[in-house]
Image 1 (cartoon, rainbow, N blue to C red):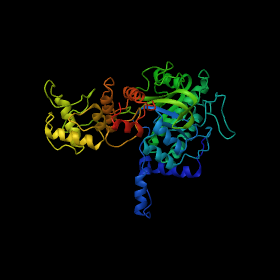
Image 2 (cartoon, rainbow, N blue to C red):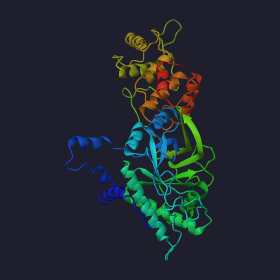
Image 3 (spheres, rainbow, N blue to C red):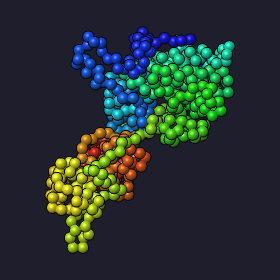
Image 4 (spheres, rainbow, N blue to C red):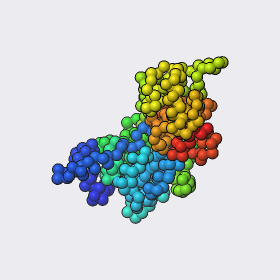
Length: 462
């Protein structure tokens, strides 16, 4: 049975089908629209989600309000959130917080969104249908044994999911996830019709320019997909990503139910803990916990500083002029200091690698401007302050970019034992080092570098 989307979503979908997803996105306002309106539309374009990411996420049926999302962004380890956008079988049909503005706000703040559809479920799933007006996947194989009706249902769900995502402003090229709850894999028609449904769902999403993801239990839907991949390749079209429900409490993407090589690298999400309450920033939400490794994983673009000058070190030494028995400071680290001060507009000399008079004057000026004792010595606390100078974006596991490098260098200056490899990716080692530093200076141990942590780094608290 082909299910129809509401009228508004159907109209949006019709435009996408006629023009293609990219054209529908770029169509913009009519010629009669004003220029300011056109600029407003362009300004609101959203990034593809979840993109390249390795880190923590949570899902909760009802999209949290903005205050909760802000508090959790600032204080929780999570940077991805599952949201139920479509499907007649979802418990949270009413989503008062889930609007285009909500979606744009989360994406602009750095959240990765996982849009979920919970529509027809496997025919042998005992807990569904949930309502009088939702249906199950049709288990009849049909005359050719290809489960035509189940496939048609999968196509219809893909259409309605794309329409819902488009209406919310989710960008084409993003991953849409189908939630297939656990079922009995030993029931042949139940299993095969579910696989036919998911295969058609994936094919249709690809036709429309979207990426396909499937959530299911490790022992049923995910195992069935993996068995097809290995034992019956080409029988059904497989999703691009899998989201494994395996509540073993281990925050990784592994499970013994499927083979290690499937959907790797960077093709898996694992729901490792089921419904429970967590409180971050004074806001409590009942969530499932997930670990993601998707796209290319979290990646950072390479950088070059001052014509290739090295500025990243596993530890940073206190620098002082050579006097008496005092050996000259490491020329490499002095050069790094000169480079960083030059970038801040505090040093105008050449990168000599020696603590000359001009460099010492710049050191004293930096110390005076940032509340440190003024002396001809650049301390570890001073290094922390210099590396942390700048903006204060919230960073956590999965974040990537130049701001992460600032944190990694500052933590290496703060804690000689940390020796974080400065990659620009907030990885497990960075998370551990940040937590150890937070614990040492009596900040909440969250692994999140929020404004409070930035302030401590800039103050050289170690």
